[in-house]
Image (cartoon, rainbow over all chains, first blue to last red; front, side, top):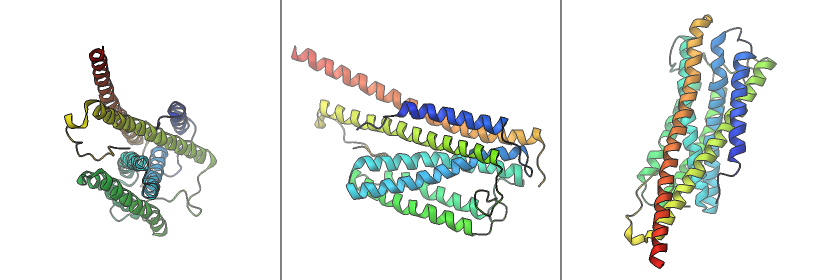
Length: 243
Length: 57
């Protein structure tokens, strides 16, 4: 199984889109009338948030496919999608805090539904790796992890909708139909940044899949060459160890 | 809160973009380390294969 197909084109597209987005952010998109220059954080914070949440949902979809087919490659896809989404979620929390400090004068606002709900989603997924590590049998580990990915993945859009329906205290809602509509140049910049972030996510996802798959295949080849009896049993790991 | 002046806002914007850049760099560095491990494993396997070939000859 080859996971690295199309990686070169994706890498080039990611670099072009991300660099293009940053150029648009700093040289083309106007400063926000209300927040001024600090609103530029929007173009990295929001795309990261959207892509992270979509990655969590994708993890759930691959979880369903794993449970339906029993194909371990889907478990690996789910694991890597959730792993990269967690990295992006850390970025969302950090950039959000920096923006909050600049715009509201506080690093964190506990009574704001958007912030707290994202933190809950992040903490929920932070349990995913310990859950995997706590199960020694690879078959059970993959099955339980898929169930977790599906349940948590279903929670993400529900949580998102609940937050959209709640009254916001300070966090703006700029992408809805009723929220402040973005001017065309800001919207285009945002869309390029979003496309760049999505492309980066897919590139890193395929990159890690290729790396994990190579490690798994190498380990299996090593065991076949050395003979199973000469090697210690597989160590417990959070990542899938068989395909 | 009124909009921050450019010199003050610039620090926050730079910090946010640096966070993004740092995350990507750390991720790529970890992946590079893993790639190094795979390379070592491959050379080990190549050694085993060549030893086997010598034994056969």
